Length: 236
Image 1 (cartoon, rainbow, N blue to C red):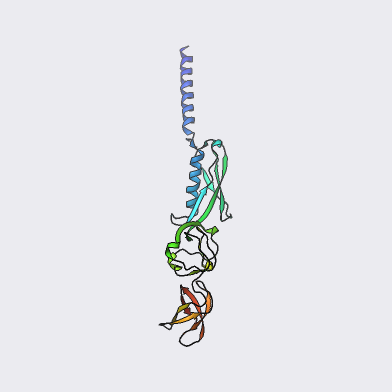
Image 2: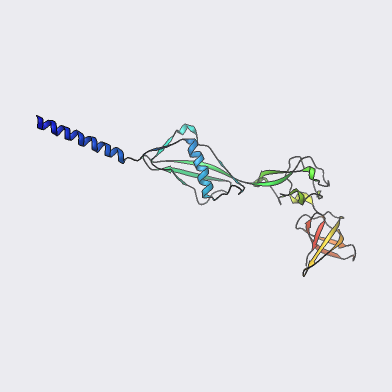
C-alpha cells in the first residue's frame, strides 16, 4: 500500500511539473484595442514614409470600428502597405499569426498641407492689392490651382485680373504683377554689370512671364521677364 502511495505521489508531482513547464513555455499574449491599433497605424506609416514633423504631409487614419473588439497577439502586430497606391490614400494591413491568425485593413488619407495666401475681403477686377487685404492660411495642396502664392510680399502692389471672393486662394494667374501701360523698372545684368532703366509695359504679365517693354529713353522695344511687381529683367 505504501508502495502505491509513493507511486501516486511521484505521478502527481511529475504531472504538476509538466503542466507548469507547458504553461511557462506559452508566450505572453498582448491585447490591443481598436483605438491602440488605429494610433499604431499612424505612427508606423509616418516612420515608413519617413515623414518629418515639418514635412507638410498630414495623415488621417480612419478609426477602426470599436465593434471589432480587442485583438490578441503573441507579439507586436505586423504592418505592411502596398508598393503602389493613390497619392491621396493608402490602405495599411495589420496582421498577427499567433495564437490565432487575424488581419485588419485600415485606410489612411494623405494630404499635402501648404501655406497659401487668401483674401480677407471681396476684391474687384483691377484692384491694387494691399497688405491688409491678404491672409496666410494652411490649405490642402490639391485644392490649389495654378502658381501658388505663399508670401504676401510677392504680390503687394499687383493688380487683380479677375474678381476674388473673401477667403479665396490667390494664385499668380489671378494677378498682373506688371500691367499693360505700367511704368516699370528694367533690370539689366550682363557680364557682372548691373544697371537699370525705366520703361512702359506693352503687355500684362505675372511672375516668370515674358513680356515686351518699351525703353523710355531709347524708345526700343525689348523682351523682358517679369521678376517682381513693376520690375522686369532683360532677357539675353
